[in-house]
Length: 303
Ligand code: ADP
Ligand code: MG
Image (cartoon, rainbow, N blue to C red):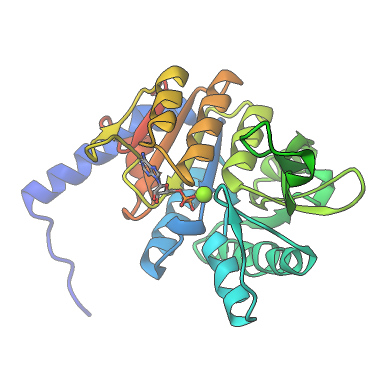
């Protein structure tokens, strides 16, 4: 049997320092709800998936209540490609016909959701996967895109098919799971009044859910360092007016637009802080939560 080597003094010092630094944060966040948006582009490699799962399980074990919402755009894209189905994108959203929606539901509600559930459980958590259909969690409405030019006639309104936004959230099933010490893992699929399924951007679901749950924090893991400025510098503490300016001049584009807008909405809706952080860094969630410096873009207050 290998004998345990004594820790070098410096290393021991570092470990003790890290643990002590975490203590006030653990105390502050105990019993609080944290909504974490994971996946899509941050869910890339196996080591990262495991480090994410360990972070979430650790949070639960120290008395914090994590609720995971996941995306899956790239995974949906891969299966559609294998099925030989091409998609058209409008304003960063996939035009989703009935057949595509079936694939979305299989990939998000099936493969991706259960992969995350399984990962958390492998690391000692008790995770339960849901879509927005379960327990009537997410009521959706169809997104209708109007062309920018008012001269274009109404028949030009772009039909995105089964692409929705959140109409309302009934958090009863999430509350029940959280109180039963489970970690809810939510796929962003909602149901319209007519019973039709809608695919919703996971950032939007996470943002609304954080508001409804009056979460302490919303954490959005993505595949960049945070919100970046024109010269690639990390931006933090942005106001709504600053964000709209950055969108208007093209500095913020694509998937970062719904992300930052839902972050601002969440703050306006009573979530204490929103963190947009780099999911490509191992243990990004722990570093952001439990160290004084943190990483990524912060909106609202750190406390
Ligand atoms: P996710 O799966 O995390 O939601 P998205 O692709 O939807 O990923 O959104 C993140 C992407 O937004 C980044 O990878 C980047 O390409 C793009 N983006 C556009 N503008 C910015 C910006 N100003 N700062 C950071 N990322 C930006
Ligand atoms: Mg996105």
